Image 1 (cartoon, rainbow, N blue to C red):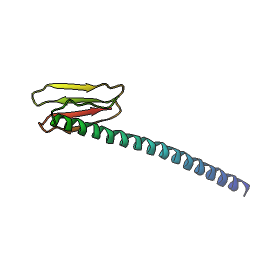
Image 2 (image 1 turned 120 degrees about the vertical axis):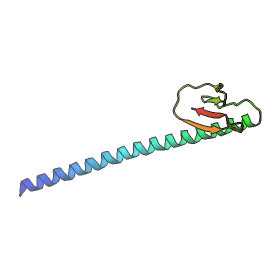
Image 3 (image 1 turned 30 degrees about the vertical axis):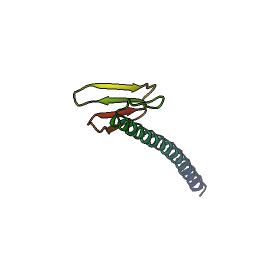
Length: 104
């Protein structure tokens, strides 16, 4: 009988440890997903703002740490802003059909 109790305790301890590890992994993945979603939402906003500036005839002015690249139908590409490290990117279409790529 004593061997059965030790086995049950070991199985319970392994189950508890596994649950704790899975919860820790879930917490890390959830935080990473939230950060990625926030970055993507910000990139979409930067791309939309740049597309609106182009439609108004203005030069795009991305926030610090963001870069906007505008690719026109004739193949001309112009870059605005500076990029330290790319974490995410998003696209928008300007009124004249130019592709606006925001990287941040």
